[in-house]
Length: 416
Image 1 (cartoon, one colour):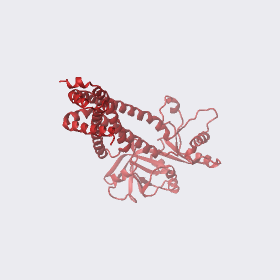
Image 2: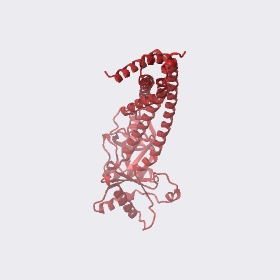
Image 3: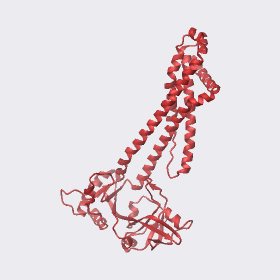
Image 4: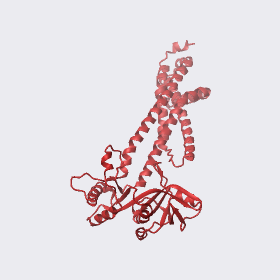
């Protein structure tokens, strides 16, 4: 073994001997680092969880779907312009589909109308209020991202004839038909009888705002008959190639201006929304959370580093005579520096491991308490946390270790 290797091994042994000899002091010294590492890992886990949840929610919107509505999803100050726009109407979906079919090599595939309102769904003594009820056509499956766990969606013939059939969301079915297959059952939607022909697979919530499992899908003609069309209509347009999104949006703008009979020079009286609008609004929120987390983490680690530096200075003072003896026996400056530096790093590393263990436990509890929120405790986060711990130990322990290595052995031996 080389001299440096021997010095390093001996320094590690001495460092852990000192930690074992002063367990309580070492624990209290590492407390700041433990809190800092818990803050680092919890914040990292939360940000990754938010990001995963956000991406899952965006996937529900579909990256190949454009949404035509009266109002834009992005925040705007031009309120009066949007308020005075004519509403989007159900029949405009048919007109838009005719334009798409007549366009050679169109980037657009199909336009599907969707209208919704909240209703009450019940069967026998069981009922669910505030159910998001969608009225649409048989083409809805071409623009939707859901899966069916049982049954099927109604077809165009059923949608056009207004047949009283429906597809239930998972939570609605579990509430009014617990433990029973809903297929073939007749449920009351605002006291109107509809036969269940399909069941949606569980989807979760959209950005935590509303549940996608608390919904019912019915034919648009039946929706108009019982609920009217006062609610806002949305047209969902599927594009053929999501890599040609810009060209598809340009084509859709021109097609909708034709459908709504707009003159050249007039401002568009409709909005084309897409998932990127949500991303643009939520990215600053994620950045803000990350900055707050970075500040809290930095403050915790700074306090921890100050504590470790202070205790290391105290340790140097307590062992001044020992340092003098070692130097008198031929110990090099780097040997003394390495000894105290490794001691500081060891305390931080132990603090980092304890912090990771605490964070893992907290994450397990959170996963049970809030199952809807994705907990992402990644290996990269473990590596980052341990790297932060070691760097904190090096930074906080270097000054006291350097001071110890520079002690005059004669003066150190006379120290009382």
